[in-house]
Image 1 (tube, rainbow, N blue to C red):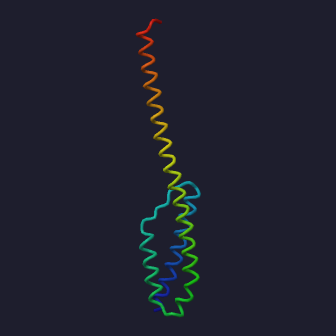
Image 2 (cartoon, one colour):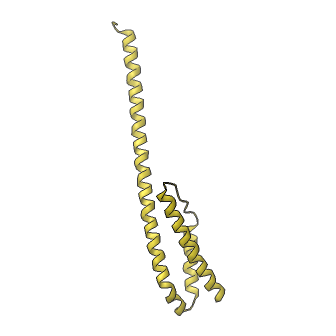
Image 3 (cartoon, one colour):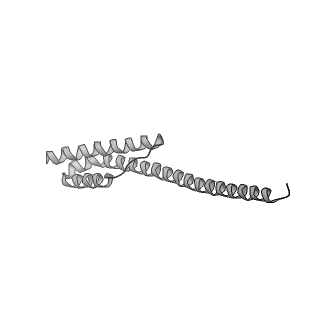
Length: 117
């Protein structure tokens, strides 16, 4: 049991660090890699279920804190996703405008050559 207890404690620490590092990356404008996070949380939940009831009660506050941190990370990820979506839409509109201006300039240039000037 002590090995399981130690593993569970390490998982809490690792996940908390991962969440904190990810949030810091997002705040700096970088992308955060979430691959493997779901497996770590599943392992943590399984580990908590393996300890005694008394130990589980000790983990309740840590689990709540972790849930709050994960919810904050979710919010940060949604904000990042929305910003990227806006940027993509803006770039798409900007590209369409550039193409339209180039086409317009080409047509105007052709008309000037063919025109009375």
